[in-house]
Image 1 (cartoon, rainbow, N blue to C red):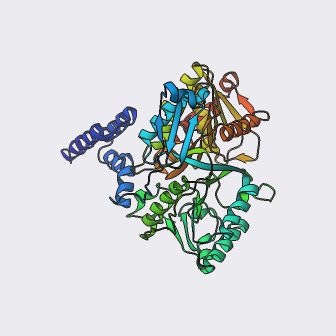
Image 2 (cartoon, rainbow, N blue to C red):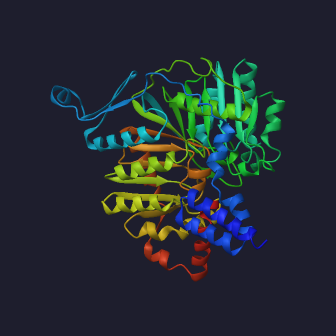
Image 3 (cartoon, rainbow, N blue to C red):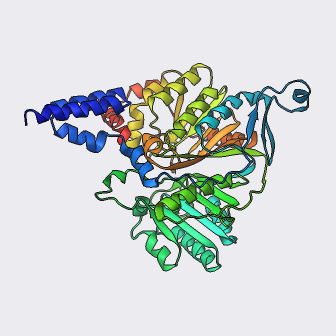
Amino acid sequence: MAVLAPLSAVFTTTHIVLHKRETRSAIGWIGLSWLVPFIGSALYLMLGVNRIRRRAVELRGDRSAYAFRDARSASFNPGLDGEAAESAPSEYCVEGSTGRSYLPVDVAHLGGLIRVVNEVATRPLLTSNNVDVLFNGEQAYPAMLKAIGEAKTSIALSSFIFDNDKWGRIFADALAEASERGVAVRVLVDAAGLHYSFPSIMGYLRRKKVRAARFLPQIFPPHLMTANLRNHRKILVVDGQIGFTGGMNIRTSHMLEEPSKQPTKDIHFRLAGPVVSHLQEVFVDDWNFATGEELRGTKWFPAPKPAGKLLARGIADGPDDNLDKMPWMLLGAITAARESIRIVTPYFLPDPSLIDALNLAAMRGVEVDVIMPGKNNLPYVQWASFGLMRPLLQFGCRAWLTAPPFEHSKVMVVDRHWMVFGSSNWDPRSHRLNFEFDVECYDGELAGRLDDWACAKLEDATQITLEDYDKRGFWRQLRDGTFRLMSPYL
């Protein structure tokens, strides 16, 4: 025993030194493995080894994603000169086989961001798209149900939460009717998200003969290590041509005009054009992972149809080969900003690199506004957010708390021309554990509208000033600081 204990600590220390990237975490685990022999090593093997990415890749296998590839990829051509520059409305042009788009002169600096995300993302920036904004369930649900009701060939629906309540059953009935018409219907719901209502919607879907599956249903050994891997994506694709995505789940609480336990404001988006294939690719990949069924052919991937002039790209992020896509893109967007950054998010627990980037942007003169709900549905997450707020406020960034009802929207707008929206939050769970899906767009009209929407929230919001923040009582500071230390696990 006297020999095995130090051997165990040496083995653990060696693994930590070789594989642990975070220095403070590594030092903590090394100390635990030596101070508490065997137990420290066992805890590290269970909790400290970063097998999230490794396990996710193993679960998905070595097959490639079901990517629908063609010549629609947009290319970035900087520095037009001579006659070309005089005839073009901008110095920066993005071209694709479905059309040509230009970045206006006043936001031509965002061309650098295009280069960054081209390197980070696995999917190309596409031209000829259209995006419509849908506020709350009152606008989103009728539009989604209309698309389902008009479906002719296929419906792909993925949701983190699909409640067995009034509106959940309305969606289930619409999906069943489409299936009865001969439409191929596939519904994927995260296993953890199913527990938000009891009994779950799965039984109702089965009785309606809707083809549905759970994402990672195993929560007991030997699958305990996958319990944290959750599919947080919200995707609906109809006939491979119309897509919906954003932060909205399927539950009555998103209908603000109807009674519910937790009224929830949110924003969703209707997409048309080639970018819809990105939504479909991600769903098909997740469906194959969950069920083993391969969805191929024109029923799921029809020839794309141009629908507008907007530049857009789907960004899949998750604890697999897509790890860290969102944090890198956010860092690129913050660095590219020259005038304004608006962030609307329900959970704000960014890592230090993102806080530093926001501070640097503020010091350059960029307006930085972080907009969060005043009353969170997860109080401990809000406490952790307050625990890390001081570094954000020191150099000119502004933080705001909105009045109820709870704001669940997830949107970022830069310089009123670039935006990203989808399922990702600004927290470690979204960036390291969840499978997420977001869309980046370049369009002054849409981004300007979303920037105005975000700024309008500030009229009734409460600003968190550094002076007020430092006046918090001792016990509140202790509570917030304690939960800040737990932020990687919330």
